[in-house]
Length: 323
Image 1 (tube, rainbow, N blue to C red):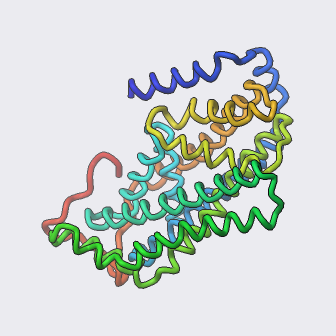
Image 2 (cartoon, helix red, strand yellow; image 1 turned 180 degrees about the vertical axis):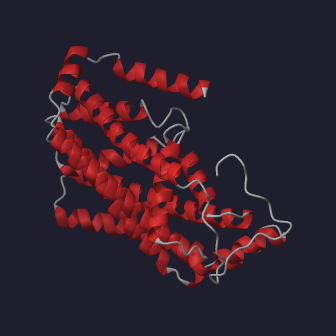
């Protein structure tokens, strides 16, 4: 915790060293909260879409909870990510909360990892496409062709890996528990279209995230093209995965300051956008905290056949840290 606090303070100090404080305060006094509210509303929708993407990856494995449960668990993960070094900590909580047994939690962790990889793949595709389009001043059709080419470059290796899970299992330890987890993931091999579906959902989620920050920028009078945010937001989001600050504070604001500077946007405006973006994240996380307090029991787990994974006499009891 001390290291995270030190990293956060150092990054914010670096970002704020050239900030005109009276100008920054003036920006907050003139925020158009209608635009910010629109960004918040869209942010909530984006989080729900991300939860639906996760559900689409978890159900074939055997987690047959209603969509509302996945949405609650996703928002709970956002809540725990607020006070952990990166969103990975929230991912662990999501996996823990989706099942009540050890084997179920391992499989849930695999679905969270697949969901995370799909999201990161979409982030990369959108960011690189937007960067190429902006640098080369491409029109819509060439931009779409570039994006399609990058998407194909992501889907092909993903399809090869998923389509050969059984072959990859031969290189893993012959431990029954390990092989059982691999067997639980075989529905992905039998239904490779799930990979395409997850990345498609991820593209919608990441584009929605860019539109959220676009609305926040408009709330303080910044009127940059949407294509800029399609490049900037994924790049900042990728940097925020690094475990060097609390909830990406300092990385978010500093990254925006660097990316906005070539467009003549002063650092005060970049920092204001970053802090207002963080405020949206806080509201979404606090909503997840309320959901966690309302239901602190993990969801029951299901096996690939839809049967309950009832704990055996030797199964681990539910951990006592998070209930």
